[in-house]
Image (cartoon, one colour):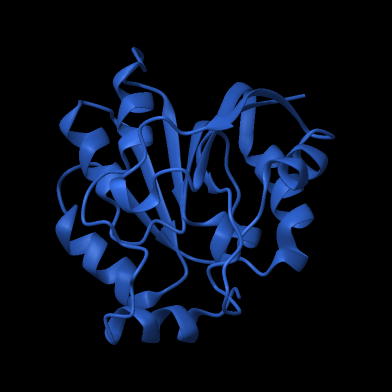
Length: 191
């Protein structure tokens, strides 16, 4: 569903049920253990970007938020003006660059499952040697047609392992209460 109008409309109509209104607790815990504040960090499908706010507050100096929805990109540009946080409006699959850390928070589940292998290959291309893909993926199926689209550990292992060493792929112990038992934490290193 890489359709800028679709996502723009979702934000304009406040149809953002995935938005927790705060940094995802598993991502906050991950960010808290990152010592190098100069890491190049990408947040694809950044939405309201609580993670970018938190990274900035913690002193990270090279944060890029990528989103396809023009209204989101404009709101973020205003919010992060003068902060050093870069906001890019664009399609993830057309994005280029090299990052040390890519934070995954509700982006993968927003994509049509037919794009998942393409996501994995492109993500591999974006992460610098020694870098990481870290974040949360849903460990559940949804009763309605997505987005969001669900998934499970077996599927993730199968599609990510050709490109990444799966350092961590485990049930989140610290999910937001609304997502308890429905998320897995990932920490993958490019092969």
